[in-house]
Length: 169
Image 1 (cartoon, one colour):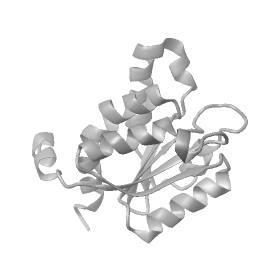
Image 2 (cartoon, rainbow, N blue to C red):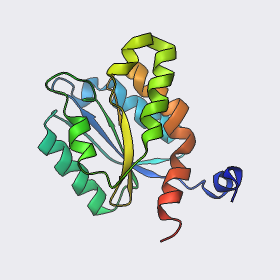
Image 3 (cartoon, one colour):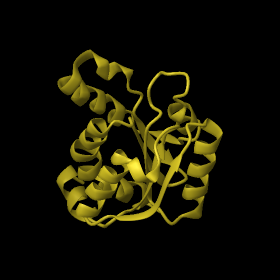
Image 4 (tube, rainbow, N blue to C red):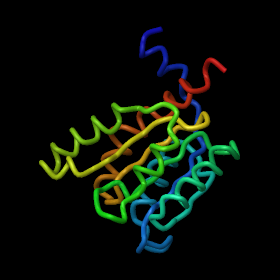
């Protein structure tokens, strides 16, 4: 089936969980989480869960497992903790769970970031994949990076990606 036909079939709204991973942010000052919510809702998607959690790998992993296994959300979008600082553990927590990786997400995100910020784009460990029939995206925590990932990559393909996960079930 041609790509265009897949897109035509894959228009359903997706229920999403938003997880902001930060040692310093709260719901009150979580600009990136609000951007994710706004851009999803603007395209008709629903927010099934929203949380701010500390950058602790075990806590991140357990929360993702709980959301995915609960089955109320078809996608989990995280922001924060994707850098290389000692406290950045999102990448390790999430990749340890992924059953299928969507390598193109991180590759294209870094390419688009490079066009925006130059060589600093290589510091991002943005990653995406599938765990327990749930699409997972891990974005950096900066609002510019979140907006870029959401507008250029995630929002245009979210329904299609979830449809692909579920179409043969």
